[in-house]
Length: 160
Image (cartoon, rainbow, N blue to C red; front, side, top):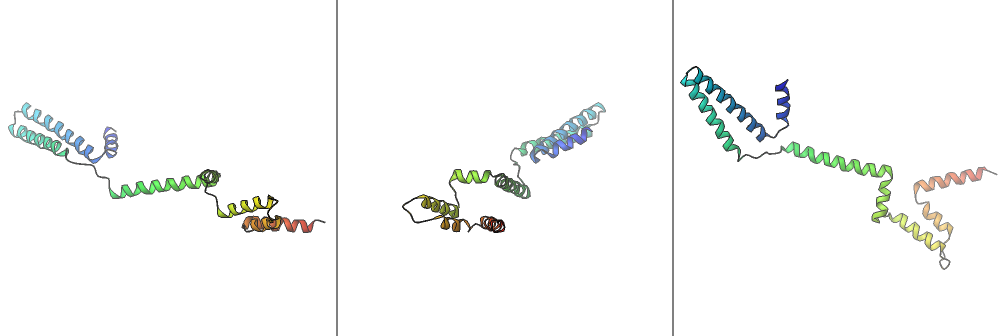
């Protein structure tokens, strides 16, 4: 269980961190081996363990000049995730109707709506010649309004 937890912990670490941790473990094992060699009075084991410890210490020294590098695929996944979040936020704003509120706050109004509003203002101005028919004609350029207008017209013709 301990080894599995350690493996998962090390898998989440950076490569430099894993190298440092493994080097520490190698040095610990080399010290244990050297102590055992001294206990059994075996100079070959002590010399080998000391050599392993020295090499591991060299790894620690060299590790100072090593940098973590993010793989290209991980960088690409990061950008894809950012793009997906941006698209999700835009869709959420649009679907909840907040997109319209943001557009109005920014002042980004569609030209068709601006021209209809100008026509409505002109229609209400007594000094202008525009009338309600021109306003309805302008509004019927919107396909949804035109469909609703036709439906309302056909209902009116059916009722006596």
